[in-house]
Amino acid sequence: MDLFVSKYINKIDKKGRVSLPSSFRNVLPKANRNEIILYKSIKTPSIEGCGVARLKEIAKRINNLDFFSEDYDDFSTSIFSEIITTTIDKEGRFLIPEELKLYADIKTEAAFFGQGHYFQIWEPKKGLNNTEDSRRRLLKEKKSLRMMLTQQK
Amino acid sequence: MDLFVSKYINKIDKKGRVSLPSSFRNVLPKANRNEIILYKSIKTPSIEGCGVARLKEIAKRINNLDFFSEDYDDFSTSIFSEIITTTIDKEGRFLIPEELKLYADIKTEAAFFGQGHYFQIWEPKKGLNNTEDSRRRLLKEKKSLRMMLTQQK
DNA sequence: TGGGATTATATGGGCGTCAATGGGTATATG
DNA sequence: CATATACCCATTGACGCCCATATAATCCCA
Image 1: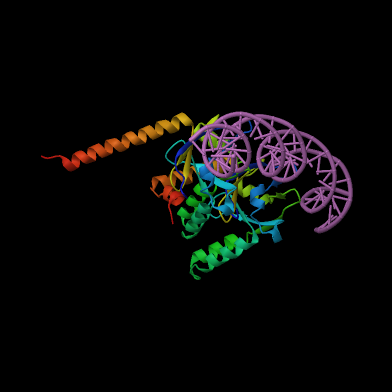
Image 2 (image 1 turned 90 degrees about the vertical axis):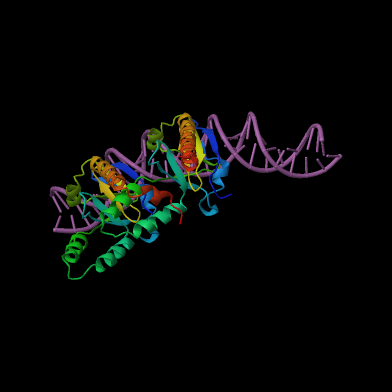
């Protein structure tokens, strides 16, 4: 499977290391399986992460925004200047930069949420609450989650 | 037959393994016959499952949403982080994740219900009751529908 | 067509491997 | 030299892979 799916809660040890879930590691391209990209989520107090390839996709999407809009600057500043690359050790662990940990209020545990082509890292309780809220919003708006899941092409 | 049909009740062994019914296994594409995706049913206390091919469909559909919209985030959170992939061993068995077992109140036995393009996994008694209820609702509807159609003033 | 043989399915259990985690030590970098 | 981080090794528990058995289904041939 070449998508980030499911959720995992892993511990952060004394040295600040945390395991990237095995299934997430397998999504990373074999060439660059020892590094990931991290940045602050724009909309939520969480960290987003992905492999290098995803970065180009984001760049493209931002590029499609109106160049003179305020959004353009805001997005490109918020994203590109904040991106941090991190290396993954042989056991599959990495260090979450202090700044990002503060931003997401992460201390002793990190919750990893698959988001398809990328993933999010949350303080566990906040992450679970966020999932709840998302689902509630979708159901309330009667957006057809079911269709999304079961619809035939 | 490339549809999930009929119902089966299988045992969960000490290790938590349960056989995916043979006829269900045959519905899975030969390429990815060793893994399925599972997620909580939206409307019922049951688990829904299908092959991984569908997941890629979903990913594509979500990716077509406006990248910066709230829906994009809600869908990708509600779907990707809630989906669990699980591998099927050579004997055709798989593990039902603890969280899903709790959600569906499944302990020692799992009832599989074909639903066409996907299937449901129930705690046996609840599953059978659900079938009853469905049938009753359907008959009631039919009856009132017929009345409506044939009733003469 | 009957009966034995072969195959498939559901189920049980042993054991090696891997993932997550912990910690010691070398190395780097300011 | 002090702190941070990469590398190495160890531990534990979960899971995958393999082999075994029972029962059912199918087949095949006399």
